[in-house]
Length: 372
Image (tube, rainbow, N blue to C red; front, side, top):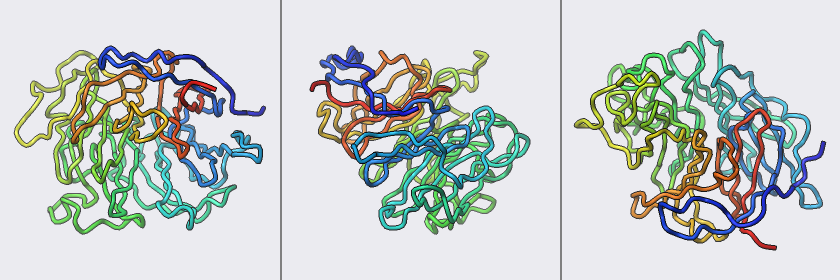
């Protein structure tokens, strides 16, 4: 079956602008590819093709043909490492090397091990257009955890060339997010070859794992670096989803502080803030279940410039969060008319906004201005 670029929706956007009072821009949404099993992340290759991860453990190539149209290659990319795909575990993020055009290297994050003893792993490989070669694991979280929840997994490059990525708390022993002898519930920072940067904040702390960048995170699934500053969001439980500006050595509170309650409606903590805890820039209660995140500074939608775009699973939307001097303004809800769980949002080199729908028959969607 061929997956040609096909029109899905036309006409004016029906995004909610009640929070901003602004007239939403007109856009149309096109299907780039379909039939993907819980797509999780995508990366844009030089020349216009795309790589998409499927949580089930496959990496898929969407190629741009001589006719300029995008088509999903039927067979998955070979050479992907073994992935634990169960529950929330699977193949997660994909990130190209800043020098990909010359070295063809990329990074993958994924669940590694068994259900009883598993880790978040980050590995590097070279993509030759058909398969991954020279696979090299560069990080494996410690210690091993049981069960298959709360992995985090999103990655981003910092301006100095180091790699920043999130690790969830595992949803077992929450207070591990506050403990420095475990990677659970942290943001982590390494060099591309896996070495630990000498200026990481806990390098000289006895008993602390040196990769730790920040602590007190529940399940971070979005991170983006804007003008050198990393922003990240994370899932709360029943409410208490957060958008944070990350700083080395900072404590973001989980589970000592939160705006949410447990799924059983039990109180997690009596505190929403405490001394020494960095409070979120924005909190979402009820939970929107934030997933991917990107920064928009394109020309196709001028009204969206200088905004974070946050994909939301439970809310079935993208939240546009305008940022001024590092602080969020009134938010706008986009793409709710799709009525889809949205796992990721990215801005392509063509200036269009790309979405991944989270379902057993997931799609890659492209958002462009309405018109001929």
